[in-house]
Structures are given as C-alpha cells and as structure tokens.
Image (cartoon, rainbow, N blue to C red; front, side, top):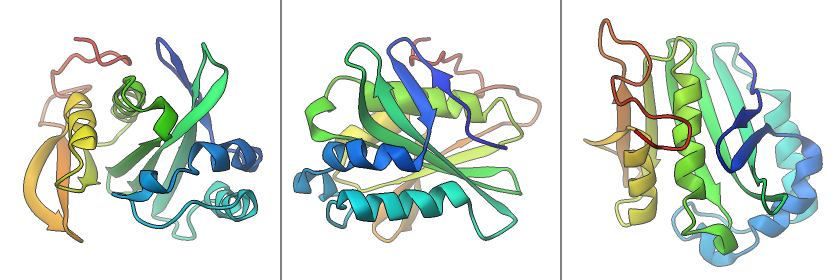
Length: 182
C-alpha cells in the first residue's frame, strides 16, 4: 500500500515528499504547537532528514508508513500533516498536526475523517490514535473521524479506536464522507 492523493471539499492530502520540508518547517515552527506532541520545532534541514527517513519507509517489512501533507487549496498553502502506520495485521495508528495559524478551521477534522475513510477502503480492521487527555481539540477530531476513547493509556495518552465490526464494510455504519458530513 502506498499513500495516494486524497481530496476533500477544501483539502488535498498529498503524499509526503522531502521537498515539502522547507514549507512545513514554517508550518510547524510555533513552539506552542508542541505542547501536546512533545519535542521542539525542526529546522528545515532536520525536517528534510526526517522526511527522507519517512519517505524511505519502515525498516520492518510488517509495517507500512504512510504520510501526507495537508494543502488548503483556497490558500495554496501547506497547513499540516496526517500519517498512518499500518501493521500487516490490519491495524492502523494515525496522527495529525495542523500549524497554529490554521487551527480552529476544521482542517484537522476534515483531514482525519478523509484519512480514516481512505484506510477503511482497504483491509484495515481497526484504527487508533493516542491523544493527551487535556487535548480537547484532538479528542474532537478523533470523535469526528469515528474513533472513541478507550480505557487504555499509553505514555499518559488516551487510546482512541475505531474497530470494523464483523460483517460490516466501510466505517462501521457511520456514513461519513471525506468532509466529515453524515
């Protein structure tokens, strides 16, 4: 499986390329953005090195890394990223981040909903995200994408999950389109 362009009403999720690092370093430059995700902003060179590793793919043959940048078409600007780590068992771990200037506009929700919808067209039977318990905006994004909180905690974060029920197709009857509408 390889990342493909995913289009929504306002967004293009574009497969990650090393060339995105320069613009994305600016998108992710706000230190406050790292409050819940940890770390500090990357320099353009450090982000390019990271993107080279991601684009090269997982060294584990049982794991696939899929990464996209989020482009807001009306502004023709990159605004964040979404990613999925797929295991051969059919499970996916997802994450998203949207730069501070574009937060509060539904971009993360629209991108995450589209990502989950795309993943469920494949043999993915569960999708999970790990969210800091105080990160209410990301919890709302996960809920919009069809994930629900579980009692499982990992490194202090709540595990949110969507699980395909036996005999179901798509997103477990939630009937979400790529914009999060029902």
